Structure formats: structure tokens, C-alpha cells
Image (cartoon, rainbow, N blue to C red; front, side):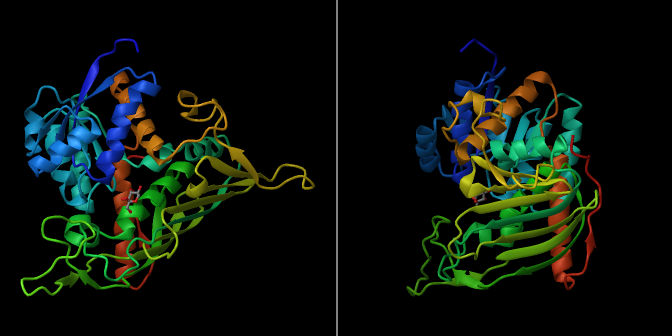
Amino acid sequence: MTAVPTLGVGMVGYAFMGAAHSQAWRSAARFFDVPLAPDMAVLCGRDAAAVTAAADKLGWRSTETDWKALLRRDDVGLVDVCTPGDTHAEIAIAALEAGKHVLCEKPLANSVDEARAMVAAAEQARARGVRSMVAFNYRRVPAVALARRLVEQGRIGQVRHVRASYLQDWIVDPEFPLVWRLQKEKAGSGALGDIGAHIVDMAQFVTGDRLTRVSALTETFVTERPLPARNNDTASSGLSASGSVERGPVTVDDAALFLGRFAGGAVATFEATRFANGRKNAIRLEINGSTGSLAFDFESMNELSFFDGTEDPSTAGFRRILVTEPTHPYVDAWWPPGHLLGYEHSFTHEVVDLLRDLAAGTDPTPSFADGLQVQLVLDAVVRSAEAGSGWQPIPSESAQEK
Ligand code: SOE
């Protein structure tokens, strides 16, 4: 590996996203030619013993128990925010003001107001050459990036329909405890912001268009759950002094379904739920255009189905593109054709693109402004659901997709 400048990374949080991002920082320079080599300088978490164990496991050189310490460290040039949504704004804004680049997990924030403040901080920092990205990783799955390329090339014509769903079932058991993702003050929303945000970003990214209004309904099927054990927020229930299981209210949606209209005229359906029994992390996106269609299924994430309506009808039909050719996005850095990639590779692609933008002085995408636009969609969904599912407009506050 030729010697390139290093970029010190400080990551806050080390649960699922922290583990996925750590794998990305570890692998980026070992598979891609990057102009900046990540230095996994410091991992931050509140519990000293736990964060030390996590740093050893995930490959971080040192630890801190106060995220503000990262802002004072000269060996940190970028702060990676992998915490629950209620701390994204505070950490990202402080980091940008301290001159640190920021990668922030999705959704950008827990509210539109927080997202607006993050965009303002990002735009002020950008003037000083300090850059930011929001981590919608699925747009960097090669098959999704290929879908974007084909739409951009006009291979399906004018986009007419967008059909997106993200189905999970990890909380169908009513005794699953009240973890942070089920608490509005920590997560901002439920399935809507956690997984609905992904399909909104994917749909807008692949079509290159923006949603302008939505009509929605949300549902919470299980309205109270056992409190998690005091010392952690995992799947174990908490016991009261009397030994009975304390319970608390679920304050977020379990499912969100909404119709949408795109600025370019396409119509859309979206479904995000954690109660699709048997579906574990099932993301499906289908785009129907005037001359063809594209369909992606995350459970076959190395494939893209493509229907070219301009072909001879006697031989036309959906064909399965195996997205493992060196000409396909990101693939040439990994394995020969036919060898497959996984969920974790999308995070590596995310940090590779970020490193390349930072070195080139260009703006990473998706930007915080793109993250604000997703937040505006989520907010319109909530407003519509609360007001009886009528149409709600989505203000065009954020910069258009580059
Ligand atoms: C939980 O629903 C979750 O971990 C999401 O938060 C991630 O963004 C998604 O990639 C996998 O599922």
C-alpha cells in the first residue's frame, strides 16, 4: 500500500452500527486505493470497561468515556457518530464547530428542527473545508448503485411507479423489552425513522427525484412492553424490587405505510414495519418506468432484476443481472465475477467514497441537506398519520441531490 496521509477517526458508540463502521474503517484501505488512510484512533463509550473491550475487539487504538474529549484530540480529524438518534445533533454540531469532519448514522436526527440545525452547522463548516455525510449505507450496495446508474442512463425511461418496502419482525414478541429503539425520546420514531428512512433515501437516490407529498398511516400493535434490565438496553427484561417485571409504554410506531408523489410525476408506495412475521431484514425496491423496470431484493443483494420493454416481446422479460462484474459499482476492488458481497461491504464503500471526497475537497453524499430532506418526509408522514392520513406537503428546504 503506497504511503498516503492518514485521517484520524474517533467513533462514538460501538453497538451494531459501531461494529459495521469499524469493519469499514478496518477494510477500506486494504481493498481500495484511498487517498487518505483511516487511523482508528479512538472509540468512545460511557462505560470504561465495556468500551475498552469493544476497542480491543473492533480494532481501535485508544478509548474515551466522554465524546467531548474527541473534539480536543489532535489525532482525530473525523468524528463518526454511531449513537442513538437523540445525540446525533449535539455531537455532530460540536464536532463540526471543532473543525472535525463528521460521518453521522441515519436517520440524521430525531426531528426536523435538529436536522435543520445540523445542516446549518454543516454549511458553516463546509466554508472552512470541514465536510459531513449521513450514512445511508444501502445506496452503496452495488446493485442499488447500478440501479441508479441505469435510471440515470434512461434505460427504463420516465419513472412512473416506485414501490418500496422494508420488513422486519424482531419485536413481534410482546414480551420483547422496551429497548431504546421503542422510545420516542431516544429514537425519534419507530419503524418509520429506523427503516422507513432507508427506503425513502433509496427511492430518492435511485430515481434522482424528490418526494413532494405523502399520505400515511402508522400503527403501534403492542403499546407497552417490559422494561429492559437496568444495566443495559438489550433484550433482557428488568425486574422491580418486588421481582415483578416492570412495564413501560411504547411511544413509537411499529409500522408506517404511506403513498407518495415525486416532483417528476411518479407515484409511490412505501411500507416499513417491524411486524412482518418471518421477514428479518427484507428490503425490496421496484421502479417501473415508461420503457422498462428495475427490481432489487436485499435478500438477493448481489442481483438486480431488469426488464427492458424495448426488446422484442417474444424474448423480453425480467432478466437477473448478477452484479459482480468489475464494471459494476465498487465490485472491482473485491473479488472476481460471481463471488458475492455482503451487508458489511456497503459500509466500506461508504467510507471509501467519504475518504475520496475529503481528499479531493468535494462534498460527500448523502449530505446533511439530503438527510434533512428525508427527515422532512418522515415528519410529513407523522403529520399525515396524525391528521387522518390526508395528503401532507414536503417543503423543499434542502439542496437538490447532486
Ligand atoms: C434495525 O432496524 C437496523 O439495525 C437499522 O437500524 C439499520 O439501519 C439497518 O441497516 C438494519 O436494521
